[in-house]
Image 1 (spheres, rainbow, N blue to C red):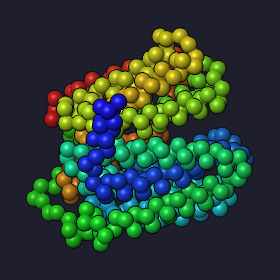
Image 2 (image 1 turned 90 degrees about the vertical axis):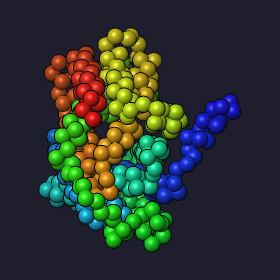
Image 3 (image 1 turned 180 degrees about the vertical axis):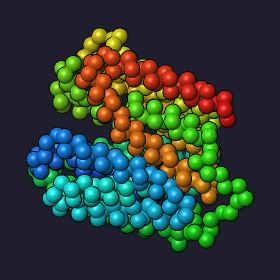
Image 4 (image 1 turned 180 degrees about the horizontal axis):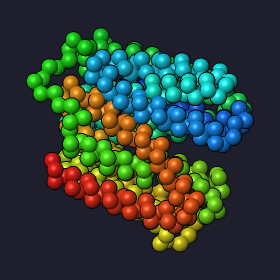
Length: 399
């Protein structure tokens, strides 16, 4: 028991105060994440749009998120990660409230695109800030702490949002907007350059003779492509998997909710300890390969293992293990190729890769399931995961 206690104490020790503050900002922000998870229900039930129109709005949101990643990354390098985070949180909060007041379909689409673009410009700036606030030896744990905050906040937002949605959909927009603004105020209070010497002002930006562009980094472009493939597979967890659980495994919605919540709970309990144990012992790419294969296995088990509830739990445990192995070390991989002057554009491409996967993954997965069945989908996802793992193996030899 003492060894376990020491393991967790060491896993959370050594991180800078700024890293903890930034994770708290993320927790406040994500705890109010209510609009996006319930957007389809809002559009179909409150606005009485057909599912096709609701899907168009979600696609518009995805397109805005991709643009936000690119734009946010570029602006981060020019204006600094603090300024972009503060602006994105504040303007995003206002736009969430404004979106809730939109009535016409074109206005909803336009406001959604603008909101997604501004809101997702926060992500590359945030990723750059984590790198600034951490040291090379604890950088992966710093990203894991941020992921822990995201998962805890998402769990709170989803649970509270479900209750609020059953009462009044419009409250979702106000709460999401106000928590964004609250996170901005907290960021300004604890991490402004004048109050925290780890948050540099623009004049403190380090000048280097080498300023490699992410757009000319061939190794990084291979990594981004493989990240999209990984994301296409992983996002089935939140798209086709719940439908499969309901239609093929005949699980109740309440049990499906418990299984989905298990993902975030396992991450919160174990990821920091796992990363602390593994960090610096092997190359990042080796852990990414293992995680990618585990994600693929989590879908293949549906075709080779019988069961219902137990099978759902087994798959969730495997995919979560894969997520914990791959994603923290993906962050460490891309950050290792950056310097102070180009970190934003690298983060922007990485953010855009996940946004692209989040848009394409559910669409492609749902089409395969509808046309060819779930068994074909799971074999296909497993095959893509193996392909991505082979790609990451090859990428390791390019470094």
